[in-house]
Structures are given as structure tokens and as C-alpha cells.
Amino acid sequence: MDAGSLNPFSKLRGRSRCPFQEQILQRINSKENLDRFIPNRSAMDYDYAHYMLTEGRKMKENQTVFSPTRDAYRMQLAEALNMNRTRILAFKNKPPTPVELFPSDHTSSVHPAKTLKPRRHIPQSSERTLDAPDLMDDFYLNLMDWGSSNVLAIALGNTVYLWDASDSSTSELVTIDDDNGPVTSVSWAPDGRHIAIGLNNSEVQLWDSASNRQLRTLRGCHRSRVGSMAWNSHILTTGGMDGMIVNNDVRIRSHVVKTYRGHRQEVCGLKWSASGQQLASGGNDNLVHIWDMSKASSNSPTQWIHRLEDHTSAVKALAWCPFQSNLLASGGGGGDRTIKFWNTHTGACLNSVDTGSQVCALLWNKNERELLSSHGFTQNQLILWKYPSMVKMAEIMGHTSRVLHMAQSPDGCTVASAAGDETLRFWNVFGVPEVAKPAPKVHQEPFSHLNRIR
Image (cartoon, rainbow, N blue to C red; front, side, top):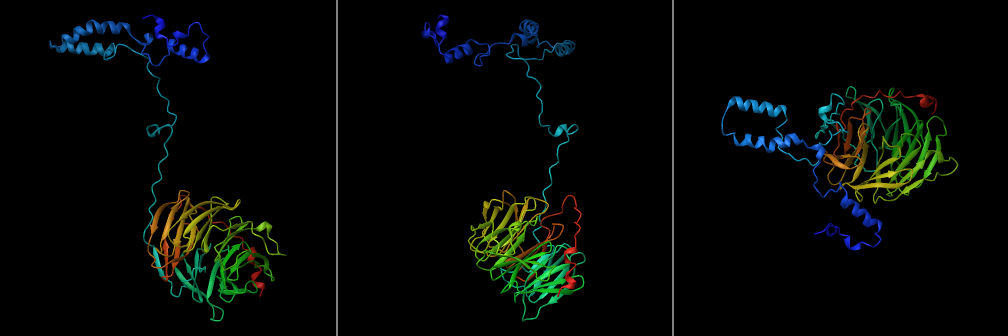
């Protein structure tokens, strides 16, 4: 067989070859052809190969004659001459020592490996349980808040009680008469000393918790009960059953400074963003509105920047993300059962998760990327979610009725929940932060004028 017969393109001689054919011919005739096993002469030891083909064969054949001295000599000779090899032919050089781009655990002396964070234990039972008699079983109200001074306020019927977490003491702040009550919402001011109390008769009272003294009453904001409130520095924003949202400047006598109109039914959720620039509102009309502080006008009702209509039931649960300023979580009622995440700059819905139960309240973990939700029908549970995967980390049972309210301690570790079963429970669900952050100093000047206004 001639050499030309090995060439698959031999029949094309005399014709011009295309570049593709030339490339294939070069690879066939190249020494780098990967399909042919060509010994690498530079990688072979010819002296060792000759020895193994002659003397080595004799040594193996004579191994039947036992001699301890001779065997010991052969072992030392084999080690000295590296004769313990088994292969004679070599097809490639010894591969280079691999370079570790990512050091493993055994290189910790040079680059210490990061230790894995131990998995946090999530208690399935409450740390403490308190009785909460006469707690109104009303989905649309906001009857509990935990202030920056580590005091929890809860409204039971016509009375507002204060529970001091530092010494577990309980005191009564005020009892509203039947003509004006019951209490329909409570909200601590940023200073942790002053507290706003919304009433069934459409009024809002401002109290100094340190002296147990009423400072003033805000009237003319609404035509019916005030079920939701949120502070933004010296501005107290109130939401009523009349669908109105009102900004009240508590430093001045004519306290109504801005009005937001957009909801057709009761406003049951209000939350200001951490920057104080955006306000989120949820209502019994299944709507979520995003309002911009800079676009607010005192002369005419303010227009929302986003009207979010994806929920199919009342929206009370609202929570701004602490690590992403334009991320808002909202929860729908019994006919919706979803938690939705919104980009409040664009108004886009980023994700929607069906929880299977009425969503009553939402809280972000201040120290980890986690979200806690409380639920009503049908499980009455708390669920801890990992964000953004929304994988369930824990499902916490304990309440026997819908968990209407949640509040978070100032350090972000403990969560208080209040339910229709008339119990108040405390959960160490968020754990202890790795580094304790100093509490921010609160500027109390915005409330200095309250004592002189009646």
C-alpha cells in the first residue's frame, strides 16, 4: 500500500485544495496528532530501558533463589537508580505540578480558610407568654408597637398598656372612655418617649409616656376610626376608615399639612421607608400605593407614584427592606395569601409567593437576609423565610387564633406577636447579632413644642 492510499484526499491530487483540506492534511501529518501514540524520546531513559530488558529479566527469573544480603542490595540499588518504575516507554513528559488557584483547608497556614457559620437554632416555643384580654380580633387595626426605648405598647379594648422589656414591668398608660374608644391603633414616635393613640371616634391623642401625660389631641384628620399610623421624624401619618391618608406636623397648631387620596376603602397599612422619602400604604380595596415625599403638595391631594393592583385581598402587612432601600414586601389577606416583593422605583413586582394562609404582618430581620410573616386562617403560624430564595427556614406554631400583630425589639433579635387568642408571645426567632451595634442617638427637638400646644 503506498503512502498516498493513507491520505483521504489522495484522489484530489492535481486539483487545487481548499483551505479546509489543507488544514486537515496538516493535522494528519503533524506530530501533535492526538489520535496517534508516538513515544516521546526526550522523556525516556534508554539506560534504564536496556537494563530492564536484559539484567532486569534475569533478576526476576532468579528471585526463586533466596538470599537476604542480595535482596537487600537489590532494594538499595533499585531505590538509588529509581528502578521501581514499571513502565519503559513514555509518551509524554511528567505533567507540571498543579497550581492551586483556590487554596484548600490544608493551606490554612498561608491563607486561612473561612470557617462555616454555624446554623442558627430557631426556637419552636415562645420565650414568654403574657395574657392579652380584650385584644380586638380585627384584621384592619394596628394595636401593638415596640419603641426605641425598649417599651412595648399594646391596646386592649379601651386601655393602652406599656410593658418595659428591661425589667418586665407592666403599667397602664391611659383608658379611653366608651364614647371615644376603643383604641384602634398605637405608634411610638422615633424618640421612644412619645406615643400616638388612634381612636374609634377619628381622633388621635399624643402622650408623653415618661410622665403619663396627654400632650394634645389631633382632630379633623378623618371622619371615622384611625386604624393605621406611621411616624416620619416629626410628621405623624394617619390612615382612616374613610380611605384618607393625612400628614400631621405635631409641632404646629394647624397640624394637617398634606393629604393623600387614592384608596377607596379603609387604609389598614402604613409604612415610611428608612430614608423618609417614600410612603407605602395598603387598603381594604386590595391596593398598594407608593407615595413620594418630595412630590407631596399641601394645596391639593397628592398623587401616588405607583398604584400596585396585583393583590386580590386587603393589604395590611407592609415592610421595607433594611438592606435594599427600594425593596418593599407586602402581604395579602385571606383571599390572596401571597407575599409580594416590589421595586418601588419602577413599580415592578419582583416575586410573589403563595403562603397558603392569610398574611397579617411582615418583619425583616435586621441582621440577616430573612423575612418573618405571621398568618391567620388557617394555620395561625409564624413562618421564617430565607430571602431571596423564599425557602422556609422554620414554621413556628403556638397561637390558636390568627396572629394579627407583630413588633420587633430595638436590637432586632426578639419578636412579639399578638393574636386573637388573647395572648402575647415573645420569640427569639432572629437570634443574636454577631456584633452589637450601638443604639443611635435620638434627636428629641421635634417634640419640644408639644407641651405648649393644646
